[in-house]
Structure formats: structure tokens, C-alpha cells
Length: 381
Ligand SMILES: [Ca+2]
Ligand SMILES: [Ca+2]
Image 1 (cartoon, protein in one colour):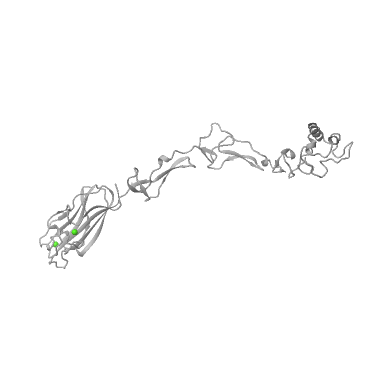
Image 2: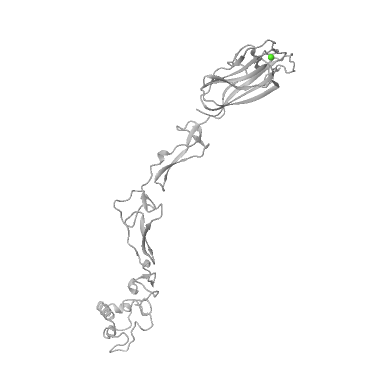
């Protein structure tokens, strides 16, 4: 019997525990043998650690437990001391140090940890990105509250990012940079402007109020219209002429085919042969408190000699008149024209229809217009 065995038996016997462990033999049989485990001096009882049977105190056949030699790798075990390697992993002796509980030292860095490699041993590496800053042991100084790990470093939390939010933007924390990001809502998404009053559309992260296709001005010359008419322009009820050499007479009715009013060059008559200096039908000042593109639409009937007469439309904006359209000399029936005027920033605009000749006319009924409308597209204050 080995000294270890004798010692243990003495100890267990002294504590009165061997009976409780279910030993099938008396204490003295083991205690007095001494020497070789294979042969006792005063008994022939076989050594229980060599009998090919797993006794209740052995963790595997003839090994482990408090009496027998520790077991080799892959033999059964209950505690580390059952194994030669002193590593009992999930019921079997192992020679893999990584199978020890807590095989590697703990670290205090908030975003680093040790991992165990069976061949390389313990390796220091980063915790997964986005994990909260923690660490195995309390770090000094402690990491910032709410911090997140990136590449093994603890990044302070963002924020607060909410103050960057708005009707068309959202302030969010980017965990990768630890900085607030502003995400723009997709352009042209409907929104409500600050203050919650105006409907708008998102444009590059800003809610811009929009008054779609608002009518800036309209007149059909029926009732108040505010136009000035230089001779030979007239404003009055439609009245057909009977004098046009091209058979394009002044229209017998206005655009709405009612007994309505229109503007025209000598309504119901042809123009005299004498030349005319530039004379205009001029609108009142039209308020335009928006930015946005402006369209002009109007209806016309035209009977003018192309060689000697011009009919033009001019826009007053930013302090000056500019020609925006020249009419066709021959438009036999009421026809609607749409003239894009482009972006107009001027807060007040004005429009005029001008007529001039450079020679003598010969029985032309002139130019009639009606239903003049200015609209602003996607207007924004
Ligand atoms: Ca009219
Ligand atoms: Ca006329």
C-alpha cells in the first residue's frame, strides 16, 4: 500500500467515514498492509485499486477518488484531483488547459478579454464591437456610463442626439463613431413645419412649407380687373367684327362663351391703316410673396399682318420689363397659351400685352385676349 493510501485510510477511518462510503472491507485490512499494493503482509485480499472493478469511491475503474491513483486522460472523473492532469472537464479527465474553469487571467480593460487557445494558450483580444463597456474586473477609472466597445476601445456614449431631430430629420447616435448623426427624411416627404401650422415637404432635411400651384392672379375681364388699356386696346363685352381680310374676326363671345367681357384691339372693329406706336394692355401690380416658378396662361384670338405688326407679352420683375413671349400672327379661334415664366423672386410683378406696327395695316381685326392667369408652382414663402 502506498503511503498515500495508508494516510487516507487512516484519516477516513479516524473520521469514521469509511463505513458511510460503502467500503466493503474493514479498515485494518488496508491500514496494516503497507508496502506493495499488490500484496498484503497479513491478508490476501486484492488491492481494490487493481481489481478491475470500479468501486463507489473510484471515478473510473481502479483510478480516481480518495484512494487510488489519479486517472489518465479521457477516464471518468468528478473533481480535478481525480485526474493526472488535474483537469476534470465534463466528467472526463482532459489534458486541455482551456477546459479548466476560468483558464485565463481576468483583465480590467473595459473592452478586452482573454480567450484560451488549446495550442497558443491565453490570448488577449477585443470583445465584440457594440458590447457595453465592462471588462472582467472593475476598471480604474471606470468606463463612461453607457459606453460601447469598438475595436477593443471603450467609446463614450453619444448625445443626447434628440435635440437634432426635427420634422424632416432624426438625430441618432452612431455607435461606431460615438457621434450624433442627423438622418434626413427622404425629399418630398410630406411634413408639418415647426409650430405645426403649415403643411410642407421635406427638402434636404428641412420642412419647407409649400403652397402648390397657387393662383397669383386671374381675370376674365368680367368685373374688377385693374388693367390699364392704351389705345387701341379696349376692355369690354365681346363683339364680332366683319372686316378681316383673313376672315379672322373679333370673337363673338368671350372664352367662356357667355356674353362676357374680354380685352382686344378695337373690339368689334378692324384696326385703321395708320401705324401704331407701342401700346400696351397693362395688368395691376401682382403680389408674389413666394419663391418658385411662375406660369402665365391666357386665351387669345389673333389676326395681325406678320410683316408690319408685333404682339408681345412682357413681364415686370426686379425693376425692369422683359419680353417673355411673341404671339403668333394667325390664331383663328380661342386658343389657350401656357407661357412658363421660370423662377421669379420679385415680390411684385406686372404683366403687359403690347402691340406695335411698323407700317400700314390692311383690314386686320387685331388681337383679343381673355382669362389671364398667373400661377406659382411649388411656391414657398
Ligand atoms: Ca371674359
Ligand atoms: Ca378688333
